[in-house]
Length: 234
Image: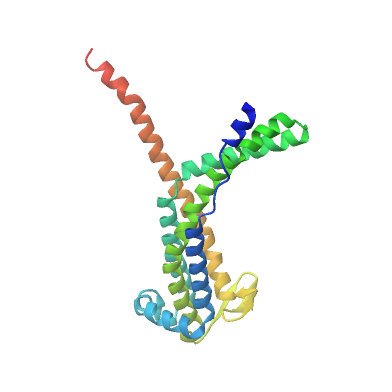
């Protein structure tokens, strides 16, 4: 009887965040609508181009540099916003806990340890809840970053399809590629991704390194501060 009561009072499975899911759905639908509606994309790109064209347009003479600078700008914004709003230490802790829990669950199943499996199943909702909280924070930031990224993408589309007279470029695997042609995705999008993805990874690692180093220095200073104060009066 006691075991049943304990099981019934255990943590419940995490409930989905309906409001956040609705916001994400609306933002995603708006992004699709803007990117696939030529008139809306063109109008939005023209508005954003008022500021970006003189800044990184270079009169259409340096299209590759325009893509690199614009992609770097968007990546820097999205990575920086995500970094300062996500608790990376908590996320790393939750990932380690989740990984260890999955390992224990596999071992319990393979050894047919029903008692251990029952106990792990009882705390599984709590583990899932912690993992869900970490992922929800990043999902909540996506509409914020999309507000900036989508208009800039709209301008880039105008820049490539309308403003550029020549759209040919060379890469190591193709000497005469065209930005307007597609290979699953438009070549200019692939070129943009080729630059921004590595930059985003490096920037994120640098920001994490800086934050973790700052926290370690703070912890060390707090650890040795009481010792210094104890030795002073003597």
